[in-house]
Length: 237
Image: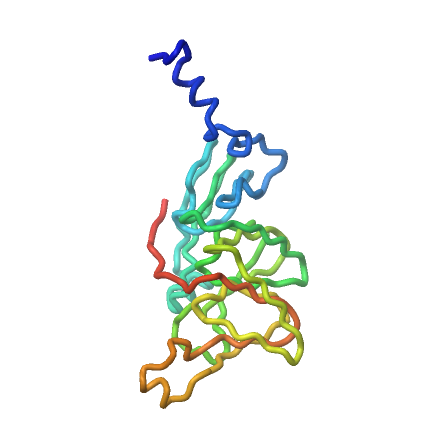
């Protein structure tokens, strides 16, 4: 019913909800772009990969298929519990990815480079990228986000971070120590190990809550989230 002579739709279109910065614009090329700070738009012409449950909207002729865990890296993921549960998006169309309103970033990876990212921080990536699951040296099967995905090749990787990331330079002779539940990832040429920052006696007395950190050495950058990790909730399409 009109209000003051104006229909509902006209009133809505004059609200901030329909501001230009919230409107979807036509795609100019296939691949991923930032829709806004909290989501990534992917123009699919063939296929792409994304975390299970990350699709929030799509249009066009697209199919979503859960990737199995029977062979290779998928079996390795099942054994390690690394947490990179993926789906394939196939067809022609536009899809929007997001995860719990986390901040979204796009990393361009070129040949000769690699980027190590914790599985919980992977949103989507180009099929031209390869990844392998590796354990942090000295971590064993202790968990705590110590199994990470190493991306190589040529393409784009969509990364999520709860809050604004802290990117810390690492220089030779000046290692950086990061909470294992806060690390998002790091660049190639960094060497990792576990570092114990409190004595056994202190741990037996209750400890500080900061007993073990990830130690990064070499030349590069480490990416840290401004909070410790929460348990992942499962989901899928």
